[in-house]
Length: 225
Image (cartoon, rainbow, N blue to C red; front, side, top):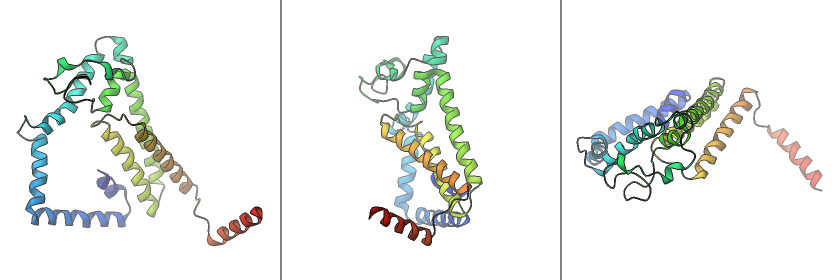
């Protein structure tokens, strides 16, 4: 996903690099049957005909959580708008929606988390809170894209990297439950870095020259003395 974003939004040199990587990947897959069989096996056990495989059930479970969340919030107008409250999913018994040991409350065997942060936020905060989260993410993405458009050269590639971080983070929320606050702090720190970097470049601010660095070092040395 990051490669696709950098291929589209990166510099010409970056696009050339990714084209070469794509060509080499095709050659490896074509000439190395073990690599090809591993990829085909991973895909078939996840979305293939074998519906009883553990990976297939894990994959479908993440989609099922959307249905569960909607079924719960539509029980009343209050729940529909505002949900059941933060962290309420940790105490909900949703085992009736799933087969034995394939979901439900965290106290049961099987999957022990929602594995879908977006569906989790829908049931916890309702459509009001979930909608605000989507708007916030789109605002971040729009800001980064705006700064990307005004950037040039290597700066455009760097801004494309920040955009890929935002997209991958939001995509990951549909596959995992982000119980670790460090990931959220890291995401917003990188967003802040991306916005600030793009604004500095848009304002024409560049790295200081060697003469400016020498002057600053001399001033620092004088002040220290």
